[in-house]
Length: 313
Image (cartoon, rainbow, N blue to C red):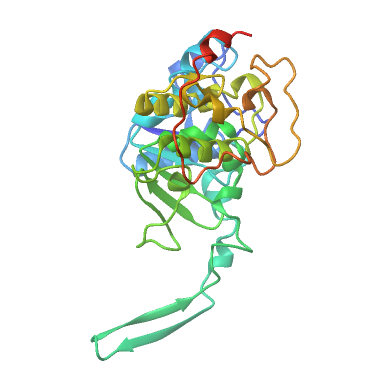
């Protein structure tokens, strides 16, 4: 199966609710779907797949029990899917994947083309020049709508493969490589790699804090979703490190975790269930994200033995 990573932006698309559950299970005509979902289904079919998982249909949106049960499985759903389709440039379900991804393509048209040949190598071809897609006037992949959304963060970190439809070009990534239309033959730091897939020689806590810096710069509608939205990533870190995770911090790295700091003032979230000493007690997004825990080198510290005893204070 495939999965879809998309933005709501405050607009609730056609979705499964308690009232529409029976009707939804009977089937939904494709022409009744919003453009982003229709495009995702077309991509799924063209790639030869029969199934796609879309959160708005596969989770009953107004049922707390179903949401609580299914949201804890989301990291497994994305991690075990064959491919994640990322509607990166679409602000909501009405924008469409293809239409939003065509928004800046006209800028990337070739400015000039000319024939070229090499008698020495016995080769010839066409050389075309265009504006670089790495800066102005293009929208960078890290500035796209989906990259401002907290829930979309772990969806693409955990996915085995991702194809992102950005404003100027398409990016495709797996867990070790990242490519784009601009550079289809050379591996780049696509958003999967930039989100933390590096060599095994790097300490996992160094990766976690760099990942957290990106995450804290994103928006989330419901503060209660702040930890669940990164919970799948935390679970993978726990599996690989053997560390114990509590309220956004790690028992074995508690002394460093308490040193979190934002670049600018942040506000505590009202009625937050997280302790005030955790970064997770604040409102997202933070401007520029986490500040002083973006570590390039890391020396593991001693486990904080007092943490468990005072965890409920």
